[in-house]
Image: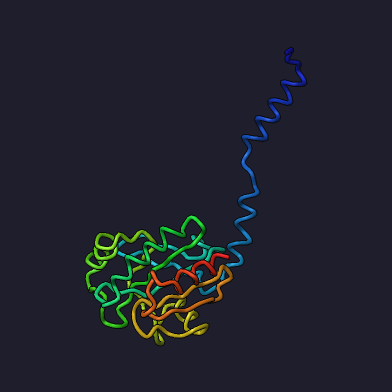
Amino acid sequence: MRVTPLLLSLGVVTVLVAAAPSAVPVAAAAPAAQACPAYLDHDFRKLHSAESVNICKAFAGKPLLIVNTASHCGFTPQFKGLEAIYEKYKDRGLVMIGFASDDFNQEDQDEGKAADICYLNYGVKFTMLSPTHVKGADANPVFAELIKQKQAPAWNFNKYFVQPDGKVQTYFAQTVAPDSPQFTDAVENLLK
């Protein structure tokens, strides 16, 4: 095949177009960030870390499973089941966020020890945040809104299934285990 100047110029144009950065992902990301509810647009420090995460910037437009946690609670073994759910559904878009809290006097006062319990003892890989208040007048902005929409956590390991638009679809108290059929059904419904 003979290469003509016209074909060469088309080839150059094609390469230039292919190499040029696309504005589509930037434009697509903007509406998702705008759609993120204000109560999620806050920075929280990660557990035993100097790094912070803004829930809107990191997870806008995704279904969230938000849990208040504690490292020395009778329900702490639920970390294992929560991690299993996260591993099973993360590729379908599920985001899980654990809010460590000492509101029920069961969080280790040493964040390093609390992190060891989460990450080493239970293999947690989902986002865990440093201790914060999850009930009462001092509740962080996320839990203040979750409480308005459903109810305040009565203990550790309450679970809030939050739709991408910020509405709480389902709430479970600590007694509903992550490996229960109703929990799995709620995750499936959240991901529809």
